Image (cartoon, rainbow over all chains, first blue to last red; front, side, top):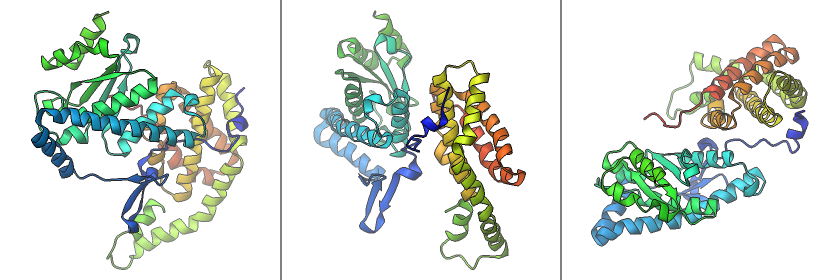
Length: 220
Length: 159
């Protein structure tokens, strides 16, 4: 039988930790924005992001995608550590014993509350060894110059590291749709590098996310 | 602070509150003792209120105990939020706590229909513990919770 008293042993029932009205605070007299743990948050204006894209393009040209990707990996490594620490503290249990549902739900809420858009996971292709991620309303590709090829390199780096650390495997991330190429959102596929090998050519060929996924799952 | 009071106090440079504003204020303030009584009952009798619901749910449902337990957990959390929303007289408080969260968690654990049954049972149980007037204070919050826990968000958000 379900015992309600047992469910309430310590009186706590974890809820939506990253709910925006509970998560973002400010020591406004010091000019600081903070999260509910007191870690510093920062609001980045759109023109600054635009400036970063255009500055990188001007100074490094082709290499700017690689720079953004590496910045994303750096960010992702630290984001993963901080995210896990916050959840482990809040749920008062080790991350390993936290259910995947709560973990992923928290990731979605966290993403949203920080203003990075809406992130959704697609586990349809899990049995083939791929995880799909879609990001809607991305502020990053939202200001990136329009382009023939996907330009969510920052997010690609973040996702690659985040899910590599989460799964304990060295995952590779490729982008298959992008708002800068006129798609409705940014879609990414995560998987082992050799299995994702064909994707770059398919993306360059202008194939849709759906047909790329079809090609990948049929490769056996 | 509650939404209604926020709206009263939060407009910088506004003139004195008018008669309607003041009557909103005094209505809320005069209802606070009743609200505290209800809040206290819900807080102190949390287990007593929810245990019969958990038992009934397990009897009517063919779901495994894990799923029922998950649903009871959702019910406890929802009732805590409903209690706070009632105390603040602010049903929008629930949206901040439940929206985008509870419905998706319920979907992932497949407790949605069980949660709705639980909320029905909760209404009946509260009618036993509270007077009709006290139940009326909780009604807006319960209705909001029911709607928010039902609305399964689709995977692809609308633009």
